[in-house]
Amino acid sequence: MIEVRSLKKSFGAQPVLQDVSFRIENGESVVIIGRSGGGKSVLLKHIIGLLQPDAGAVLIDSEDIVAMNERQLLRVRRKFGMVFQGAALFDSMTVAENVAFGLRRHEHLTEAEIAKRVAATLDMVDLPGTENKNPAELSGGMRKRVGLARAIIYEPQIVLYDEPTTGLDPIVSDSIDKLIIRVRDHLRVTSIVVTHDMRSARRVGNRVLMLHDKKIYANCTPEALFTSQDSVVRQFVDGVADS
Amino acid sequence: MLSLRAMNFLAGTWVGEWLVGLGRITLLSREAIASASTFKFSRRDVLYQIYFIGIKSQSVVIVTGAFTGMVLAAQTYFQFHKVKMDTATLAVVSVSMCSELGPVLTALMVAGRVGAAIAAEIGTMRVTEQIDALRTLATHPTDYLVVPRLVASIIAVPLLTVESMIVGIAASYAVAVGLLGIDPAYAWWNMLKYSGDVDVMIGLIKSVFYGGIIAMVGCYKGLSCSVGAEGVGRATTEAVVYSSITILICNFFLTLVLEHICIILGL
Image 1 (spheres, rainbow over the protein chains, first blue to last red):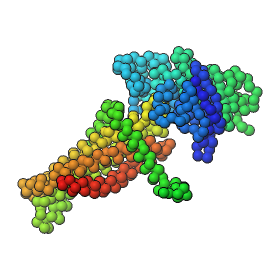
Image 2 (image 1 turned 135 degrees about the horizontal axis):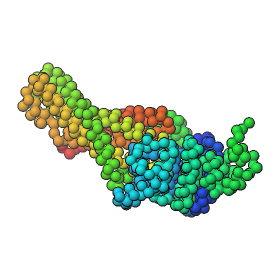
Image 3 (image 1 turned 30 degrees about the vertical axis):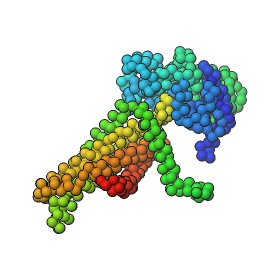
Image 4 (image 1 turned 120 degrees about the vertical axis):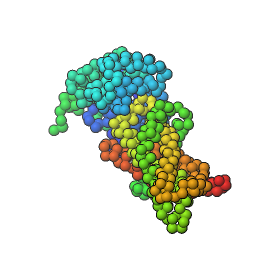
């Protein structure tokens, strides 16, 4: 269970989040939407402890991670997998080394077992046989798939996606959405997806949190969001610029 | 104690920024030493870094050592020849190469090559979110990035320093005997008489400190670099400049302290 209580964050004099609170139950698939630069990725980074808030609490399975130091956070982070907007693959390593990174660091497995797990995970993200490729040889969609494989290989309880379909064409975006749903259903993980792709939000989320004006403006099902008559929600869903 | 007003004034100046940087690098060094002392770092990563810092720096160190020894021999000979002390040339070269020039010039060359590379690599990892990715994979950046480089640098720089000393003395011998016509037997005998284990020891102790400075400044600058290509460029430049200046300042204080210890111990 993830609970965020009265979270506040500013960068210098610029407030980004003000009094943000919500709760996500185990197994839920939650989409966080909002305008570019609205603090969605900042919120996601607070959930995994990559950023420290100015005030408020982030509870992971009832443990407040805000008070933890970097070493204490390492234990909590083993519950998480995270897919970055730009994939953040280690460019000095091959695909197999990237995917196996978490296993090699934290589990005592033989090379044969690691190779087997890597092959199975790459198969799951529809990238079989790419073990020896370098990240520079991969397309944007392939990089995100490798990032996802790296995040799920050690079977975390929670997977965070930071704009997984940004910069991809509609067909590749659709395949990434299907992959997120497949991972959610096969591994029974809690998913949190940050996106401003409304089609993606509708497909992968059981619930939508809309971040607007530094606060959670809407917290509802995708159906309720898409049929809402609220002017702010409608403007975002319909993609209409300010006049 | 500094008043709050004085601290606020300092915060906006380069002195304040310098103090903050010094504090942060001290904390990073403490974290790295604590992590290294658990011996849980990857041996494979350390070996790779020794290869990168040590093996790949050899050509630079050999050329620097050789030509420094050669010019030192020539310059010393030209001065000593005036007072008929030609055969003391190699003694001066040997002591200088072992306790001062060998460790300092090696460290400066390695700082230029390796310090810049460390800052650029880690800085690029930072701006492309690879360091955040490490943290999400429950890996502490200090354990994975800083400790192998620190351990490798502390091992490799003294080895490179020894190489520089040997090459420098050999090159100076070749110049002194082959080019300047100094009697080889007297030159060699004087060298052994006036330089000893303690000079080599001082040089090696210094090089351990310099290895640590190169790795820590490079890692710190990489980890704290600002976003964008400009940030990586600045971090790279600052890593070289700051580590070189720190090495030169430390050299003075280490010389005073180590020579004083030698006097106390009667070495």
